[in-house]
Structures are given as C-alpha cells and as structure tokens.
Image (cartoon, rainbow, N blue to C red):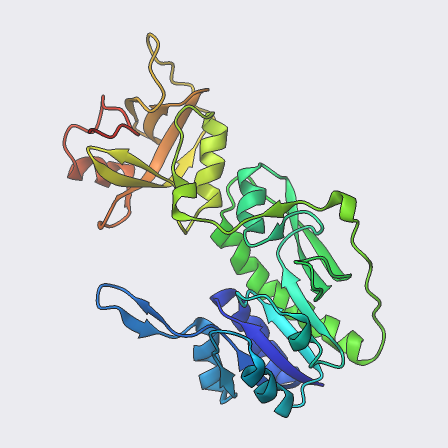
Length: 316
C-alpha cells in the first residue's frame, strides 16, 4: 500500500513514523515553513523535520492546485492519510487516491467536528472524548467511521495532555486500520448527522478569562487552552497568563461581598485565592507576558502589590 501522508504538528509525527515502518510512504504533504520568533526565522513543521530525517519526498504547497495534483499523481499513491494537516482536500485531490483517504480526529464523532475538538470538550466539562479514524469526505469530518476509541477526561487533563495521548495511541490505531483496509476487512459506519456538532479554530482572544463566570468554568477554560493560546487576564496593565488553577477543597471563606476578579489572599498550601462570579478559584501557576511561568510563591516574590488588587481591569 502506497501512502501519501498529510500532517503538520507534532501530534502527527508518531503516526508518520509508524506508517513508514509498516507501509510504503511515497510522499509527505505538510504546511510551508513559517516565520517565528523575534528574528522571524523560517521554521519547518515537526512533520517536515521527521520526513527529512526519514528521507521521504516532501511537498509544501500554499494551495492544492493542478500542479500539486500532477506531482501527487506521479507518485501513484493508493491512499491518503491525514492528521491535522491544516488544509481542506477538494474532490479533485481526493480523486487521486484509489482507496480514498482516512483521517484521525480527536473527538467522539459526530460530536465536535472541526478544528478544536479537544479544547471544546474540556471547556464544556465533558466526561469523555475519543480518538476516531474516519474516511475523508467532502463535508468536514463527516466521513464513515472506521475506528473509535472512547477515553475518559479527568478533572486535571489539559488539551496538551490529551493530544500527547492521541499522538501516541493514534499511531497504533492508524496502523491497525490501514492493515485491515489493505485486506478488505474493514467497513465504515455512517455518522448520525442529527447528532453532529461543530467547533471552530481557537483564537488568542478565546483564552480571555471572564471573572464573572463560575470558578469551575474558568478552571476548565484554563485547561482547555493549555498550552496555547493560554488562559489570560489583565493585571497592572499587563497580560497575565494563568497556567494552572484549581477549585477543589477550597474551605477559605471571604469576608463581605468581593467582586469577581478580586484577589482575596493566599492559601499557603494551595495558591492565590480569587473571587469569581460563583465561588473561589486558586491560582497555582502564573506568567506575566514575556516572563517565565512561575509557581504562585515564586510569582509573589517577584511582583509588588499583587494582593488586594482586582484581575481583569484595564485602565484607559
């Protein structure tokens, strides 16, 4: 089986390695290098770096146009395997593959079709999600399901944590699915369109903490957008990222009627206590913009007048 592999982030790398060991990966499709950092130096995607290491042909088109289709057709691939590539495949491109294409999606499809299924599941407080492998279809994430493995979502898991798990386990599942497909042993199950829900690409602004929300909602948002874009607020006219927080077993009782975002004190064993729209939240790890992430004790040692102020307020 000749495979064209399409992927970009680190999550796709273990699958590329595993498929290259078991099948004939005839080419790798990944996004163009991007300028990053202060020096705006071009940086290759993790998938490109691994493809270079494996000595595989690499394609990095801006658009999947006719020229790219000719290049792919010359490889004579049997099937397309996609994992977080970042571009939509049109009908002319998908027609290049006699066996069609398969895609790994980290959600309990048909729930959370789209670009940010893990963040959405954590933010909404879902108790489980899944690793799903589906057939490519023209409508986003609507293809027949070939494999689906549910996973519980613990109360402390972050998006980064779960994507690490998807990267590891997804590689094993993808090899299993392609092996069965090559033998004609696998039939897809159509999705229930009436149960389909959708999520959009995450933006930096999505991480802004609304202190009028409940403590549980804010804690889930912080985990949902960890490591990126990060849950953040404003303090002393600076962006302040909250990297880790908790709400469990907080017995501290505030006096009076504190307003949402007000810093009330410190639980020496837990962290910095902040009032929300419903309950208290304990900030365990914080990071001022352009500085290192610190535990709450080290953070307090490095800033002045943090206590008794209110988060989220912007002057001017």
